Each structure stands twice: as C-alpha cells, then as structure tokens.
Image (cartoon, rainbow, N blue to C red; front, side, top):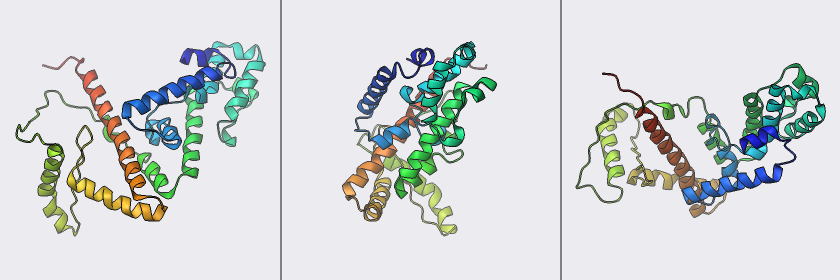
Length: 266
C-alpha cells in the first residue's frame, strides 16, 4: 500500500487507501477490545513524540508520499500536472504557512519525512484546538519533551525475576508493588511535607487499590467539571491509560526481541 501511495497520483487510489485505513482501525479496535472514538483514532495516527501511536493514515499522507517520490525520480520536472494536483491535495492537509507551490518544490525538492511531519503537526494542532480542557491537558502531557523517553530504555540481559507462588490472586502483583512503593518512599515524602500515594498497574491491566482510588477521585472531579456521567469519565480514563499501557508493553517486548538477537559480550 505504501508503494501504491508513492507511485500513484493521490486522487486515484483514495478509495482503496481509505478502505485500508478503515481496516487498520478495525484491527486496532479488535486488538484492544475497545470501541475507538474518532478523536482517539486521530491521536493514534500521530507520531510517538506527539502522544500518538505512529499509526499513520495512508490516505492522509498519500500526497506527501507521491510528491517526494515524484521529485526523487526526476519526473516532477517533466510534467507538472500530476505534481500540481498532489500539491493541491497536500495543501488542504497542512496549515497555510506550510503550503507548497510547484515552483518551491522544483527549486528545493522536499523529503517524505518533512512533508509528513507538517501534516502530522497540523493534525496535532487540530486535536488541541477542538479538545476539551481535560483532553487538551492529557495530550500536551503525552507530547511534552521527553514524555516518552522511558520507552527507549535499553533492557539489560540476564534479568532476574522473582515469583511468589502464594500471590496468585488477581491484582496481587499490583497491590504488592504499591505496598513496596509506600514502604520505600513514605518517610521521605513525609519529610518533604508530601503525601505518598503509591500507584501500580499489572502488565495485563489490573490496577492496584491505591491507583483505583486515585483514578476514581479524578473521575468524580472531571465528571463535574465536564458535565459528563461519572461512568463515562471512568471508562474514558481507563481506556486512555490502557492504550498507553499496551504501547509500553509492546515496546518492551520489541526491545527484548531485538536484544535477544544481539551477540552477548563475554
């Protein structure tokens, strides 16, 4: 599909690309077992650094792919008709300052990365502009500088895991982690005049008791400020956090898969 977007004028395969995007969205929803809203799906299409999942829409980025491919092949200098059509479609997807002209493209051929970055930024700012105060704060926090830096942590070889066969009840790991956090940090927090609230979540989504209490309190406040049912706010909070959790777990699994193939030093 990427080859189709790069080699075909974007107005021709638009229906096919939109159907592909729809299939990706359905697959994503099925994998997470959630009904993804339009806003959540648009955020998922953003880059990781902008708080998204990197699931770029082919139909959205097709003009950028075609323009970059056309110019890198040299055919853009032969016939400007297809180039102009692609530029018109591209300009409809970016902010006015980032709009292209045939002359500017011929003078300085842009890369696919640069063009797609501007489309992504326009999508990002559009989400911010139309978001509720709570959603806007959430998106800004997820896209802040170094917000996702911990996802790039390189895991160590020969990791040692411990398992307590007596702790087999649901949520035992999360509750145990919260207790250890409390024992480790409570004294220091008290000295600083802070309240220590340990929060933990298991890999497969079970939240510790303290974490559930905090999220419940946040949902109560948000439901009042947003004039929305508390149950809907709770579902939205857990849905958002579930997406972040799945993304981080996937990243960790991928990191281990890559590292396991690297030669270990003596």
